Image (cartoon, rainbow, N blue to C red; front, side):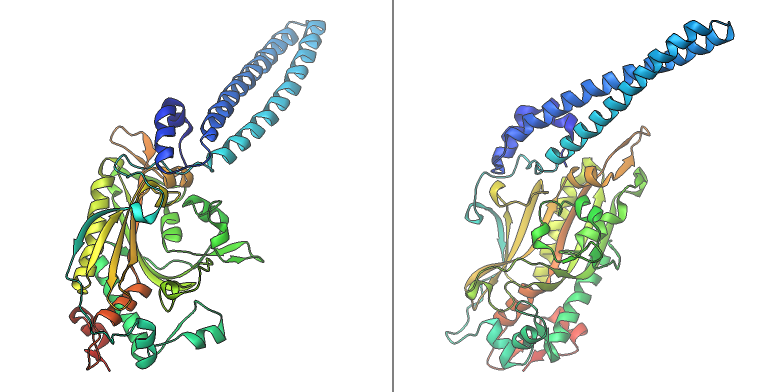
Amino acid sequence: MLQVSYIRDNREQVLERLAVKNFKQPDLVDEVIQLDDKRRQTQTSFDNASAEVNAAAKKIGELMRTGKQVEADTWKVIAATRKDNIKELGEQLTGIEDDLQQKLVLLPNLPHSSVPKGLAPEENEVVLENGAIPQLPANALPHWELAAKYKLIDFELGVKITGAGFPVYTNKGAKLQRALINFFIDEAEKAGYKEVSVPLMVNEASGFGTGQLPDKEGQMYFVTEDNLYLIPTAEVPITNLYRDVILKADELPIKNCGHTPCFRREAGSYGAHVRGLNRLHQFDKVEIVQVVNPETSYDVLEQMSLHVQSLLQKLGLPYRVLRLCGGDMGFTSALTYDMETWSAAQQRWLEVSSVSNFETFQSNRLKLRFRNAEGKTQLAHTLNGSALALPRIVATLLENNQTEKGIKVPEVLVPYTKFEWID
């Protein structure tokens, strides 16, 4: 959530940056400023009326002590009137603050100055490409056919049990899935992240804290009886570990990682681009999350990007890094890098990770602060990234490593799978 003071002091810059993000309601900026003016005026009137009541109470006490009962009674009437006024002003102030909050939560985070303008994924900026594109024979199979051939994933059984988008991993497919999770967690721990195991459901306050609510409630599964949401990513519970917390400066950076299933309602469309593992309602992911000093957050973002790239390099997957344009960025992000791997059988790039800096947008909602060197509290910066999401990693590993003999398992995974080939 943006800070009102920043919006007031930087109105033109806020409007300029929101335009980069293709925000369709710029009038909200002036509405926020006007509501804040009204809030300030009402707060001043409330404070003045409270001061008058306090002064009247002191005056009444003095008059009573000197036996001036009639004058004291007059001041009591004045004080009673002011108290009624205070009550009315307090109710007005609460209503104005509620209106202001409702407007504020509709404003997305401001994009970093390096974010390119653009409306669609085609306008994202390619930062780098790494690795040779595999050349497969003409009869190469897409991953959903390989999964059926080697009995790795049963999509139809998942439909029977739950519905489309809930695959069942079997045999070596299940072992590959578990191997990737353990590999990603081990690599995160080597990079200094502390593993946490978190709940798979969160309350409304947690969803609001990281920006999923009220922006993405339609994309999350909702447990109506208990007013809980199934998590769309481990980012939500991990970041909320620090909601309403004041940290010490020497506790930063905080680095956590965690593996969870992720649940997303968005259905997508039909066709090859969403077939198989390309888009699911439930999938596994290892998430890395950092809470850092604002002075270092963009250096940290680059470090997190390099960590994700190192995983793709160790798996032998060709990839590219994109800096997302304003129109393709998430609501809460100030800067996002997407990592995509090349699917040799599908002949297209598949997104497998997003790494984002949220600056103070989440921490303002979370009331996540730290004490700086001067002993004053200030908002921390939060960042997170997929390291990595499994479905499309599995898809590209199967497709890119297929041979006449079978599917070659990347060397770094063999200690985890205990087999070198899927055949």
